[in-house]
Length: 249
Image: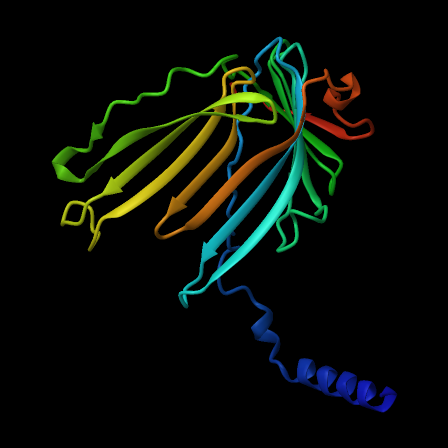
């Protein structure tokens, strides 16, 4: 094995020496990068409705060869009686619903101070932005919507009521259809289906399911709901992090 490793090192060194020096000159400007982020449960700074819970996310994606792949994660969310919000963000893995995955950020929203902290464990930096979210959700339109030029529309369905974790929830389904035609560029109807189970007490969706013909399926489930006021320390950004305040208004 040691002999084989030595041969590999010698070969690699010779290969590097054989590359002309001019090849190290940049042939284009630095490239950007793209990434996908999935937006799950939205938490508004509603006062007087404290809770803590776990959000379990499952994301089934369609691949170019027609197969699918499913990745998951679970993360902690919380809100105190003053409307302050804490959320974890974590990486996805195939077993992320059962195993804890790496943290990508810790987020803190404070409606009284109108500040939003996004803290990165990898850099120990907290970026601070203005926070101006409404305390309660606006009414959701339920009347059908038609897009211009026959491009499609949005319809809504009432799914009734039920109980989840001893909380009353209201179910609804939203279907957005893009019709085929020259105005849309689609060869056949493309329906996007969203299902919601909403808790009026907490003013959050306890279950969200989405299906997009070209993007796959997403599901978000709020579990382990505890209505006891969380520990106040949970809503304090980590100590020892560098704080960078933005001037974005």
